Amino acid sequence: MGNFITFEGIEGCGKSTQIQLLGEWLVSIGKRVLMTREPGGTELGERIRTLLKDKCLDGHFSAKAELLLFEASRAQHMEKKIVPALTRGDDVLCDRFSDSSTVYQGAARKVPTSDVAFLNKFATNNLMPDLTIIVDITSEESVRRVLGRRGQIDRIEKENLSFFNDVRNGYLSIAKGDRRFLVVNGDQSVSDIQNEIRREYRARFM
Ligand code: TYD
Image (tube, rainbow, N blue to C red; front, side):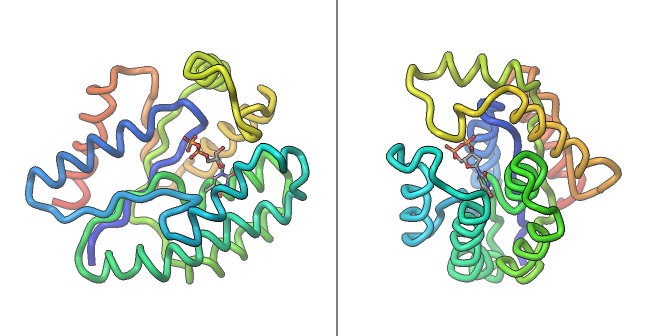
């Protein structure tokens, strides 16, 4: 089985850059790697992603409907892409996974935690990542980076600072005392963050 590594963090934390760099390094040392994301990763998942990001639906999702769409994308992704890749022996690097539902839908949108946990298990057959990297920045830094990145911001990114605070605190609280997680300070330089991630990969998997 390959190693299943997920990346989490609030908007603008820089996780996508880090996934790209880790993927390139792994390929350079001879690993086979699947880089993928949620919502998305499959044809159905990408259509669900488009639906979730549709500006016309701004504010029209019930929290439960939204959660179920993320989980539908995840179930498809798991069965059709992630499990086959891990079984082939490939490493899988996934931009967001079930922890995103735990913190965005659970901690921030207040869907009961036990419901989110059940649906995460249902969608994934309880297959957990081997390592989850949380790139941690403050909610103020997140909003600053997102607004600097582009003029127009989407529905989820438009949420207020207190929502981002809930998300950040949600991540820090699920990571506390759980060896599955590595929390990296996202205020460091891109290369310092990457070095920390590679060090962790070596320590755990090589
Ligand atoms: P995306 O543009 O990929 O944001 P980012 O670059 O920050 O990952 O959009 C994904 C959005 O969906 C992001 O705001 C987090 C949210 N999300 C959830 O609320 N629940 C989930 O289960 C997942 C996977 C994502």
